[in-house]
Image (cartoon, rainbow, N blue to C red; front, side, top):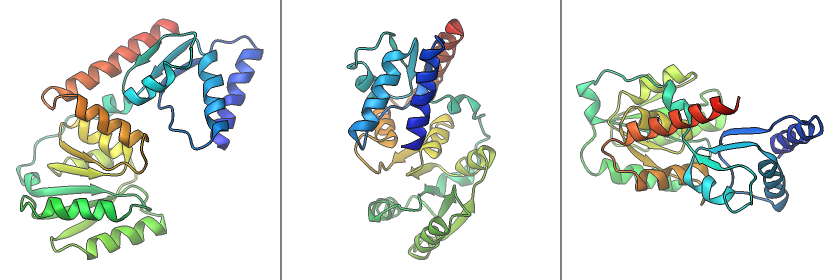
Length: 233
C-alpha cells in the first residue's frame, strides 16, 4: 500500500507541475482494497502513455476510460536474458522455484511431475536464500523428495539464468523465474497464488500463445513496447 500511495503522490506532483505521466510495462491489479483500485484508476486516467505487461492488466485498464491508448507488451526482463548452451544432462532435471509461503499445492504438483519418471534430479532455487522462512521451506521440500535434490541460492539475474538453464522443465511460484524460463524456451509450469495475480496472468498468456515461436513473439512484444516508449520520450 505504501508503494502505491508513493506512486500516486508522484502522479499528483506531475499533474501539479504539468509534467507528462508515462506508465511503462505496468502490471495493474488485482486489487485487495477499493482504495488501492481508486489510486490506480486515478494514476492511469492521468497518464499520457500506458503500456502493460500482460493481457489481464490490459483488459482491466481498458475499461477505465483512459485518455491514452493501452499498449499490451511484455516484461522487459525477457530481453536481458541471453540464450544459453544446451546441456544434454539437463533433460532429466526438474527446476522448482518456491516462495517462503508456498503451500501444499506446489508440493502436490511437484509430486505428480516426478511420478512421470522423466526426472532424476530436482533443483530447488531459492531467490531469497537469506530469508529464514524460505530457507526452512526449501529444506522441508527437499527432505520430502524421494528423488535426489539440491537447494541452489540465487542472488542475481545471472545466477537465476544459469540455474534455470540447467533444467528442462521449470515449476515456479516466482514471477521472474517464469520470465527466465520463457526467455530460454523451456517447458514451464506456473503456480499462481491468487486468482488474477501476475503469475495467473502469465499462465493465461502462455495458454493463449502456441509453444512454437512463443519466445520470439514475446520478444516482439517487448520490442514494440520499447519503440512506442521511445516515441513519447
